[in-house]
Image: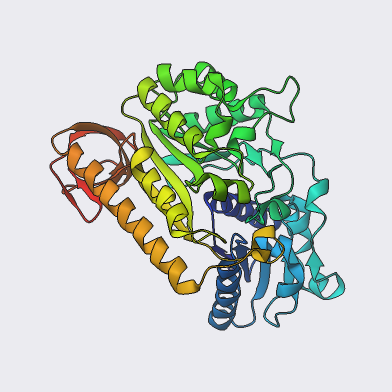
Length: 419
């Protein structure tokens, strides 16, 4: 009888999705079969609730399967998942990336004689391996260059799920990207938990901009390099120089802004003020006029007044934001913000809706400005691709998947461009 390959479910961020791909390879190498692996997120209490819901659903759909739970929620509150009758094993964020962990899960009889919870102290981890995977699909590859975070924002549990900041050495990153380019990938995205802290723990303390410049210099055949979410206050001179001079660095930056009011930013324990964010966007646009910004913004943070919220709402225009990720505040047990005076749920939801409406308006404005423009588009599927600015484009006729083509935008529909 043929072995049943494991089922993987991923919740949360792009880094989790990346690590799921690495776990698939580790599980396959160990010969794991008949298991369900749930890679959880811990960013909000709602994320943990959804993880438990997903576990129960998968257990119903796969009776008799081993249920292995990992990810940030498993790391921060392993006892929650160990107490679920459906769960066979709880594995920490470090353990999930180790071949030995999966080898030990191979024999079902081992499950009964080993600890149900295999979660070590994430703060003791000093290194992040460069997990060599082939990316997602045939178009874009994601390369993890950093993990963890040294900062302690008052709303965030993630450092306790990911540990302190660790960087993958530049040489390892470059070699992996060369391998991916040789396999035919036309775009590479650098990912991490706190990407702009890359290099602080490496000899000579290089900065993210140094890594970007090194990649572009040593991998000349890489058509497109993209960087994921950054903390704009940590943007270094080399990164700004790359924005100004390197056309292969894509003109799209997703910013971890979180709020637009100085008092709320201080209560969040962020390291930037409102004017810092505005100045960064103005400087980046001067260096690269086609630059597009996305941003994370939290609605309804504790103590936020209507006036404070208005300052966050104004960031959409003041920072020329196009892609908004709006998070209604959700108190996370174990964080300082959970102990602050909370807003009422309906008010939080209403403010999140107003932010999303402003984001929709900004996106519509960007889309309409592209009609008649010519773009270089990376095909993610035969009928869908993304511009250099990461704007989605739908094609009327099928195109070669994975290729970069030049096309003129004919219109817009449903939050996408048409070509």
